[in-house]
Length: 393
Image 1 (cartoon, helix red, strand yellow):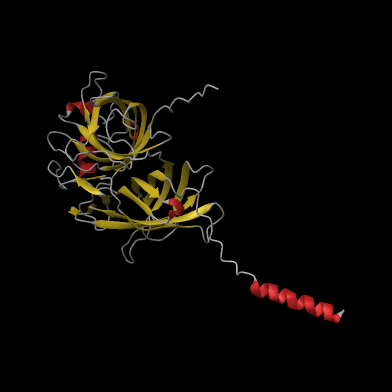
Image 2 (cartoon, one colour; image 1 turned 180 degrees about the vertical axis):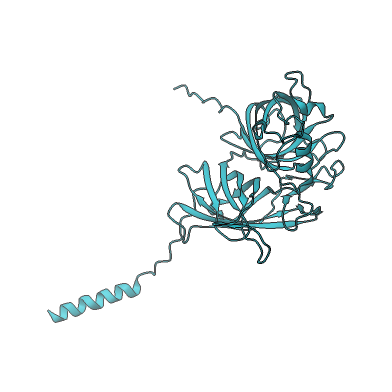
C-alpha cells in the first residue's frame, strides 16, 4: 500500500513538472474596440474657491458664482483591441475672454477662415487628421462593464484669454459605460479638483472601405434632417457675448435653443429654417431693445468655401450657413444684418452616417466678418433611418 501511494505521488509530481505552464489570459478588450464614434461633450468648469483674503463670498459648497459652460464635438477611432486610438476634437470652454487670466479657451485641430476672421484672426475647424496622443483604454480596476478612456487632444488653433496661440493641448480622462451592441456609449470625466465636469455621448459611425463620403449629394450630406440646438452665452468678459447682449437687451450667461430642419439636395447648397428662443424672451429692464429671438429664419449652407475641401473621410466637416431673408417670417431680426450667418463643424454618425453632432465655431456679418461664437452651443442633426432592405425568399 505504501509503495503504491509513493508511486502515485511521484507520478503526480512528474506530471506537474512536465505539464506546460499556462500563460496569463489577457483581459478581454471592450466591445467598442474596432469601431469609430462621433463624440459630444457637454458640461462646465467647477466653481473655484476664492483666494485667501480675497473677500469672496463662500457658500456651503464653495465660491458662489456662475459656472462656465463647456461643449465639444469630435471623432474618435479605436483599432481592434484598442491598441491604437486616433481622432480630432473642437472644444469650447468659456469662449474668448479678454481680461480674465486663465478663463476662456477654444481649440480645434486646424485654423480656418484666417483671411476673413476678425479679432482673433481665425476660427477652429476640422481637418480630417489625427490629433490625439497618449491615448489608451483599460478595464483594469474599473467596475464591471466600464472602461477608462484617456487621451490628449492637440490643437493647431488654440485661443486662451488674449488671442490665438499657435498650438495647445488638453488631457481628458473618462469612465465609459459599455452598452449592449456598442452603438451608443456614455461617459463622464474622472473626478479631479482641476478637471472640468463633462458628460460624453459617443455614437457609432458606419465608415465604408475608403471612409465616409465627402461631397454634397451623398450621405451624410443628403436628404432631410431635423435640427435641435442649445447653448449658453459666455460671461460679460467675452467681448462678443457682451456686444450680442447689448444689442439684444439680453442677459449675460443666458440660455438659448434653436429648432428647425435642413434639406441637402443632390447638387447646390442646403436650405433650411430655424426658430430661436433666447432666455425665454427676458429683456434687460429699461434697455428699450427687443430680445433677439427670431422665428422662421431661412438659411442656406455649404461646405466651407474658404478652406476646402470642407469634409473628410473620418466624418468630420466644416459648414458655413447664411441667413437669407425674412420672407417666411418678418420677426427674423438676424436677416436685418447684412451677411448674417454662422459657422459650424460637424461629425457624422449612424447606421448610414445620416445623423450628425455639430458645434458652433463662429458668427459672421458683412460689418464684422467671422468672429468667435460668444457662446457654447451644439446641435444634433437627425435624419429618418434608411429604409429596411426586404429580401425576397
